[in-house]
Image (cartoon, rainbow, N blue to C red; front, side):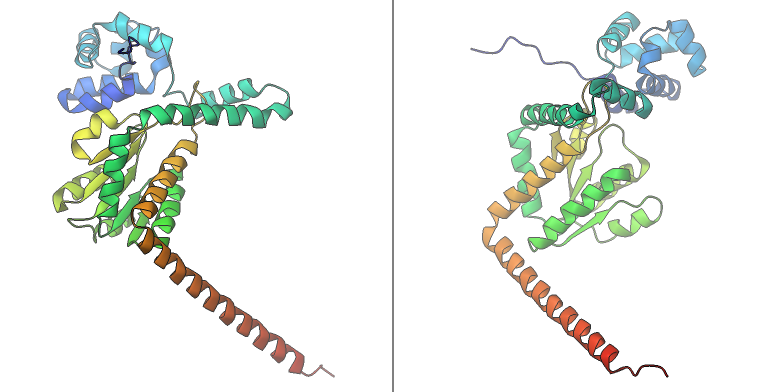
Length: 309
């Protein structure tokens, strides 16, 4: 029997990301303001929103309808029911602290419970077919470039190490500005970009998408809200929410997705991965020998050094 439970529609940030190219410059300004300030929009009139965005109430209404809402009341109801993704960091911190309360003994339990909730949600939001497409694309790639800007850049480095240890050519890029361009130069047809971008496309990430399309490289997107906006520009989308109940964003789900990709790739090419790990062990053992020899030499020199008179 088919389920009668209706899936929730796209959030306001998802709608803005997906339909931005259809909006005029004035409508884009209104849409971005609404996505960035959901609490204010949830209780504001069209006239007030027009003043806040430097446009007009008519422009506000046109923007709301262009985003797929029947009107401003519909948008306001949606925002009032769920102000989930766009609270300020301070707001998320305060909600997290409220959940913990004054009993520090509960902190671990609260955090673990929240992470379990995120992982259970990811179990359903990460589609198996998309996961298989992602694994297949990376498996067949000549070169894997993992791209994540900001704090997520550390995850890009981590995944790249896992790829290198499986014998794959890989690199991570997390720097902003012109240094970002250096990592894109080797990218070509047959390569794969693993792009981690959750809520809005940063300028560097837009350049990655454009360059990948230009050279024929495929893109695997790990995201919270950008699946609808970028689905036509990527090979596969792995969607999972990164925070619940307006609290601080978590890296748990992103790490889990990267771990799952790594394990699936090792399973797909088990002999290659095992051989690479054997080479790693050989190099590590030799490194340990060289370090031990150097330490021994230093100690012998120290013992031979004459005491000063």
